[in-house]
Amino acid sequence: MLCLSSAIPIVPFAAALLLLCSLRIDASVHEYLGEKFVAKGNAFVVHGGSEGIYSSAPGLNESSPGDSFIRFERIIFRRPLDFSNFSSDSIHAVLFEVDDRETIGGSAYGGQRAVCCTADLAKLGVCKQGQIIYRPSTNDPGWPQVFGASFDMDATETTLQPRSIQITRTGMYNLYFIHCDPQLKDVEVEGKTVWKNPSGYLPGRMAPLMKFYGLMSLAFVLLGLFWFSQYARFWREVLPLQNCITLVITLGMFEMALWYFDYAEFNETGTRPTGITLWAVTFGTVKRTVARLVILIVSMGYGVVRPTLGGLTSKVVLLGGTFFLASEVLEIIENVGAVSDHSGKARLFFVLPVAVLDAFFILWIFTSLSSTLNKLQARRMTAKLDIYRKFTNALAIAVIVSVGWICYELYFKSNDVYNEQWRNAWIITAFWQVLSFSLLCVICALWAPSQNSMRYAYSSEDADEEFDKDDTLKLIKPSPVALKDVSTELRSPTGDNGLPHSDFEQEKTA
Image (cartoon, rainbow, N blue to C red; front, side):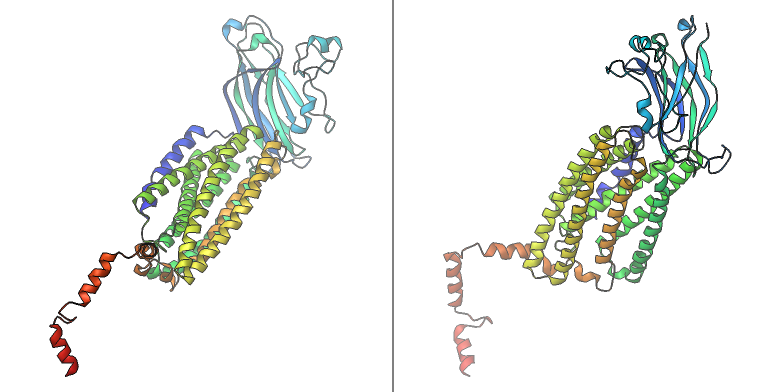
């Protein structure tokens, strides 16, 4: 298809460039490369990571395969030489489960909540001024975990003692490096922490996706076997539309396989394989963009009602491809936020533009479908009309389900500010993959290659020009000049066979 061939080449490069510019996904191995403390209230903070971790069985140690832990490896705090002429209070590492967030900080007489102990709280005897405020959790008295290191006189760096903390309670864990001394505002953090689940290094909210993409890869293989077998049997009857469906299936197989290997590598090493991730996102972006363009041009009747889209329509479809690509890029950025440290309300900012672009796409599709159905019904093309009605019904069901799910997704993300529902977050991604695959299966069933494929193809008898001409003639009144010409021709001295009129009469009486 001409419109697809001109639109596709720009997609992977644009998607790859935008991905490289916007992709920032924290791995299970969190590295700190000169991170600087930021003032938050009366404290100075560096966010060290946030991940969902499943509990390990009691009694396991770090070398056990089913153990889950958070390990601190050579965390170094550095300060400038000009600010090394004093010994400091401790810089703390504060590790807590999200349900215990209220155990960090406090307030005097119901005032503003503070992380560092204020003079008023110190007078009450609940803490020492300049120290971090925390109290034991009611769920687990050993939490939150708070430990630190301090600078000696003239020292420019200090090291946090390496340690490994076993996770015995499933939850969303947060790590912050905090200090309360304004003289240490230029301190930087270097080092890394390792977060591990019982099944591997894959973060808990992403762990179910590895199995999901494995199943989706198998589903695409089965669909591909059906489609390619039909394609090979009836290759002489294949339509251009079926070639595009073949492209979508092929891209989907690559996308699902790449995502599975991406998550498997992530789970094995703890670090996101950037190369595989880049290719998976690129194949997925190309697949969804091509699929949307295919649905659009099918809705316009290309190859069924009309032989070409025409110059202007092709440009409009190409513009639509740009809209589809923009929607995909926004969704990529939103999904990146879903697996990083963005809050639910921050991710909501990316959901709304995607919803608006999708609504525009849906309106465009159904407007084109309505026009195509009217033409097919007016021409009494029963076979084509039947397949288009089934296609319309499938799209309508998909849209209704999508709208319902978008409402749920907006509710889910706006109310999950602290990622407390992290164990269900993978369903958001999985749903859209299942829905698009289901719609692809419907399209494959309706337009599967067969010995009767050509009956759905455009033929010269279905020319738009003839259809438009019939409609136009009904609105044109015959002119008197035309009638005069016809009557003059009937009274001409020659007959239809070119003989004189008298000769023609003789032949009749002979």
